[in-house]
Image (cartoon, rainbow, N blue to C red; front, side, top):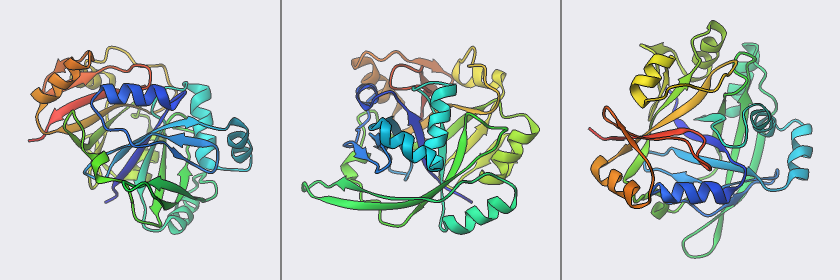
Length: 284
């Protein structure tokens, strides 16, 4: 069973994401810079998952590296062109051996692109920097142009400050991701080939679930009336476990964030810097 590592959330600039996520009661880590022209402002959770709002820091480097074959940037660029710069483009699953997984997926006929290997500095509480090192590759399918799954192998420790995993809204981790427009045969095969077999419309990961939901279920669970017209699957909603949903509601109200109670969920609609629905649900 695979684990959810993180989700990639394109934004036009990190200030918009940081402002919005902070208002939602999240602790946002210091900006991190990739060597291929992008930057992030991550939100880390206690269950090992995290948000990665992603912005373009240096367009020249970004375009050059994309043209050289960086699959991560190619998918990011495609999403920004097709959908925009405020959304949810990729889901990263943990890998113990990215090279072996890539060979396996290539043998199955998927376009994986080359391994993207990089290091970047992470600021530490004492003011020093430590490096993280990652190997990743994107597994693409024409049936899923607006949502990509990729394998993420950590070659180093995750040297992130534990203080950044404590949030004013009480969130402890991503529990599920709702994926729309996933009923078509080829799209379903793609999702199952990379993430796992569906059971009653869900793919179980070690620390979360991918929920493949038709429009009527999305409306019932999140109050969503309509979705963007897309030619394939799209990740549209994130469920976050909180310790006390009443407390979360108070935090949102103090920040002036509109929310809606839909069944057991406290739902926050997309906004600038948050191009996806967030639903808080109390831990049972």
